[in-house]
Length: 389
Length: 151
Ligand code: SF4
Ligand code: SF4
Image 1 (cartoon, each protein chain N blue to C red):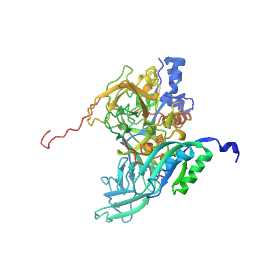
Image 2: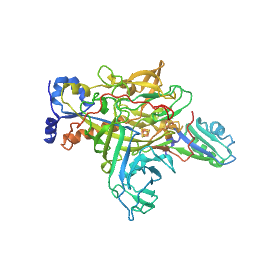
Image 3: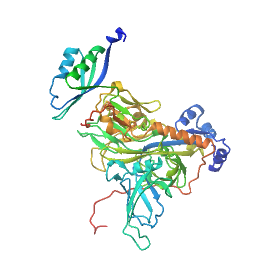
Image 4: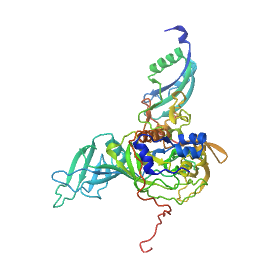
């Protein structure tokens, strides 16, 4: 069994000799050459996803005005941003809706406009302090006029996700798109065999400090994502069949592209943001090679009826991504059309860009400085009185 | 114009707007009876202030022209629709969310490269896709007020 280290692979990348393929391409290579030979020949496999990821946002530092202000009420193009940090720091959450345009424009749109280089209207007020006497400011900023602007997304790149349908007799509007009544459609939101965390199911090579493609720039995995839950049901190949691991990621917004970060509005649900993420997986040994060669037919998820307003809605059926991607799935003895919400076309593009970066010696792999938790059990939120617990 | 083209049949979508107070006139009846058009009503909205119809019509070119003139004489605006839906390809991220609701199959994903494909000829002009597109890459292709998507 061949064994490579991160350092050996990076040596090859530096000398532009690394063999890099995408998580879709590796499948054919393994078929042709067998796992042992493929593990020897291939150094890195690139994975990617481009889908709506609500738990996203950006930290900004505006710089100090003269006289200075300690901002506590902050609006960017009428979208509320946090006034809960230091004087001119803020966090703008992707899903925050505009006070004047509602969910047609939100935090994600502000982020997209900043990336596009557009002027953004900043209004802020303060109660005024001895050291920050100014009480209001009304001005325009761009990504170049401010200090830091970095994306920090607390939960991205979900390892698998439940598919959605609607058994009620009215159309429902959800973050899984528009779901037609009486089980007339099914939506899903994963890139399947190309999706990052489905190719490294136990997160052997992805951890804190892993360098990634984020929104068109180089970014990093900074922590486990919120609701990270590796203790989910897995199939024999180790791949979780439910929403499992998640990542917190960060990267320089100023270097990103609106091609890979795109604001979204889900009708009657709210604002979200398409985030493009690519993660390189080093083929350290044959085991990693086996993981990255997983196919859509061996990756499963469950379909849920999103019209049931309970966190413990029962699954309707189990399906593979091969079935979901085929365009119809069998549900209640009927063929029901499926539609994705995450773009496989853009995900493929990202996997291709990352592959080029690595092949050209511009992107080195990082060994995680610490692993992500391998077990967890997220809690629900129960309604309790103040004197309980 | 070449004479042989004049008798060719074609199938187009049209948008008719009735002025206030005229919505009750039997214009579609005349279009069928006097101009021998095959008509499929895709959308109809009639209220006190206005009447709007989106029709799929099939007939000989000169009859369609005649129908347009007839509508003009009746004070009814007659617009041909090339594209019931305007698809902004630069904005589109090819996610496929619109294909989940499109009843006609006019919006579909090419499963080889997962690009969105829009076939204007198949479109019913129902407008349900407009609000299903999360990046607002779809807009009405003509200036009729979009009718809100309903169940
Ligand atoms: S208007 Fe209706 S039929 Fe036409 S593309 Fe949109 S959803 Fe499909
Ligand atoms: S929903 Fe919008 S962005 Fe997505 S494929 Fe359809 S038109 Fe393109």
